[in-house]
Image 1: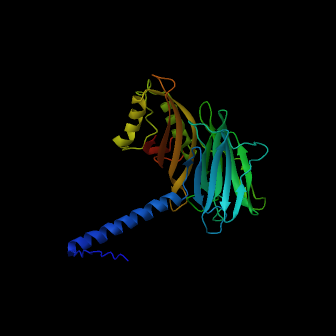
Image 2: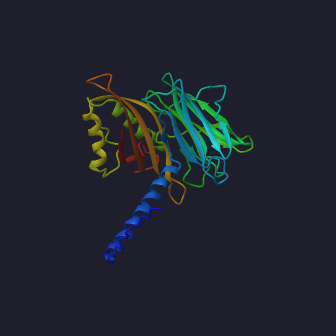
Image 3: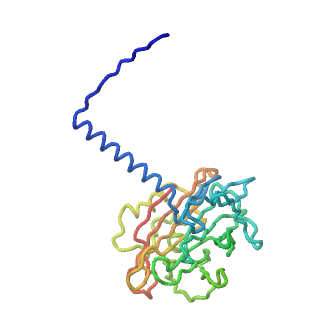
Length: 321
């Protein structure tokens, strides 16, 4: 029998080394918690690549479910795994597609509780052969029901930051403005119903955003003709630099789609901050086969009189690529 003797080294740590070790451990734990929380928290707008998992409580039981988006032969399919069940999100027969995969215009998911039942609805934006596709899925009777479908390219939410009745908005970029249709959830019918409102041109900052979109689409040649009435007083140089960067890239910009919501309201329930997310396809003017996606996050705040055009002005911008 062979006996192996092992020597042990005893290391004595100084107090400062112990402090450093404890501090490093605490920082590491905090970083892990932060990363995990970011991965599981539902987002306002999620761009989806070929395959994507979105984690959130989608059936109101207080537990995380998994929304799985996958592509087969470039077609999108969506499924929710909740507990031991897998539930397919089937589009309405009026628009029987969830869209097709486009590298430069991927599917987007927005989770928003417009029914105020603490269970978010699933809002989908995609495209089918360059035609926009929108769907809204509601958790109902143990499954997901498609309660809205359409072919607009803008999805919005109004009165989600106050005590008023939330509104779902579906819009599109028209010749001289952003056209918007309003839908409200009817609890007795468990459906969205179109409601007619005579909105002002400045509703949810759509006039300022329309001018911004058209300005970006005119770059780089029209950089010097920046609209003067859509920017909030004191807009920082860093925010304005977003325009300079877009112009300097020497691309042709094409608006793809957008999402918006009110982020804050004052004590009277009036909207005091709005967030828009705008997605552009950029084709290089030097090489037409060089194509990129650009996402611009825009914040707007009120300035002036509520009845004035461009009442909501751009107070910040940041660029994602």
